[in-house]
Length: 158
Image (cartoon, rainbow, N blue to C red; front, side, top):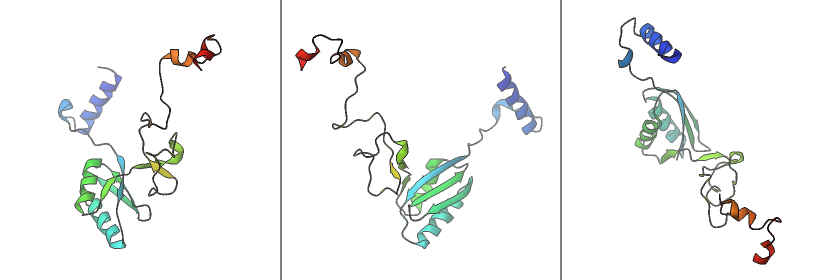
């Protein structure tokens, strides 16, 4: 048993009042923040969403930005349960699809750029997905040396 295992064993003993149920304890949920995009038109919609999500077990705070259509939920609730509860209100809801544009390598490609995105945000895009307008990346070094000055036949290809 390493140092980490020893510490877990001791904390389990202390946490359970000294009983020896080391391997039978429940896993504690991680504190997390879930961001959702929820369609909200009025203050009634905001109140409905806030009351619904606040009643979810494990939720500590619910922050709503009506202008950005963004709901931020912090607590020990799972993201899937928060999303399900938001959809149960009858509103269109999804996990927050945007990231700040300065975190994306190419924020104005077709997949990332979204006119409906809040100011300063673009859609999350897989960085390895390429389109026909973007270059194709090759791992083979022979392609890189094909047009080099060290290759005497390079100009014959052109």
